[in-house]
Image (tube, rainbow over all chains, first blue to last red; front, side, top):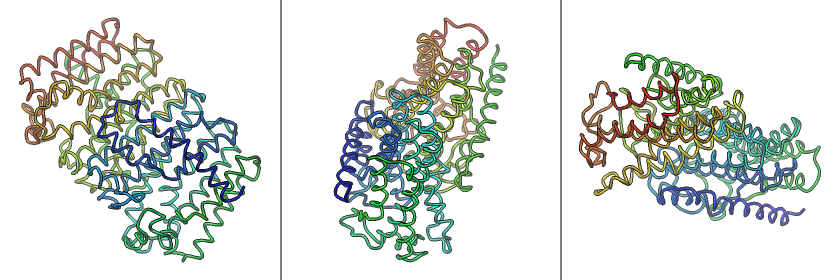
Length: 298
Length: 298
């Protein structure tokens, strides 16, 4: 599978996710103004990395992608809400997201807070809907994993630490790693593990998914920090240099660019090693996806 | 059961809920600053109406209160997060809540947003923990009901409509009722229905719980609007007259005080009628609780 083939395969999966996302709020009785604000941030592209990981791990352990889809989609709702709230004036105060005005710039702060709250909560509705195709015990365990990963000890806690660290001199590498393991790592790791849990994987399978996810999540964040320095604004859809401007401690600021690149590559090697026991097209896709993450430019 | 006995019984249940709330975040690895902000709003009193309703309906249909407790506690986390976000400057901009500074006054806006997000997400972790004592299929169905009630078509959607209606002249009674059925009604109704679902109640039992919950939720809101005019600030722990000051349409502003009181009493009668088929101390407690809601002064 070459780079073009992997991009095509990922794009096809992202398109399946996109189609599910487009329908998942429409059937509910959401007030139109709120629905518009939620879909503004949820729809219209993005890599859909977390749902694609969840689906592919489900398939690796024998569950059809369609059965895992509502649960996989929930990860994108959580990710999307976190971006809306992170962009708020009281938080990172970002005006631009994916090349267009951030949610609060388009709909005002009150609606941006509510759109985020709505997406966070609807995500758990989607999780429960996976119970139509998957045994309830597995769905419940996966839902618990998602809540822990997205919650106050995971993603939300990571954002709290990120706020604390901004402008604070002397943030150490272990502190930075802990913050990122929560803020971006936990959700990516949970996406992989939940796919395995939904498919009824054994303990070794769950561990493989978790190890892969933690390593890929870490690599993803390191590359994000690198791209904020060397990336292209038009390709990224957001301004570069914002970490420096906000006095944020990053991997490059602590380690330099070269050592940061090396660390990202090591993490990808760890992710690949975690899947050594698995063969076939799904395992190959996951290996390629891990490698693709350090090669990405957006 | 007289008024003193019902107050005592409710207080005992609220104390059981309080004890569970005090422990439910401690065992997690939440960054200390964020944990403090979450517990600031979650702990320290309140009527714990939603958990008490959930527990009592579970008991009415034969499930021990202890088995329903983690799920019941989830309702208080959701209620607590909604108060934090509603108080934010971009929303209702309230400085005082339960007689002390609102969360953003005590911890700043960023932490208040994150404390709310954390409580919203941890609530769904607690739901899943009910799976230890209750069959997974029931827990999953109850979790879905909670997500729908708390989400964009329910509580969050109601807050969005409330924002739209503020300062808008000519809000009609059906519009006001729809907004409140979402904003406060949905969660109270779901607390009752989830208790029944967790206990494995039949369709008639679920309908009774839902009808009771919808009627009690409506009565509760009408009394809230009345207390904002005739209540005592010290007893309520918040300023009275704030609805008028914010140009909010309320039941008294549309119907007058007497007709509003009559409507609340009618709702309580509906709630009581919904439980006509049930006897015993739990049914009696629920009937008393409904009557207590229109008699309350805080």
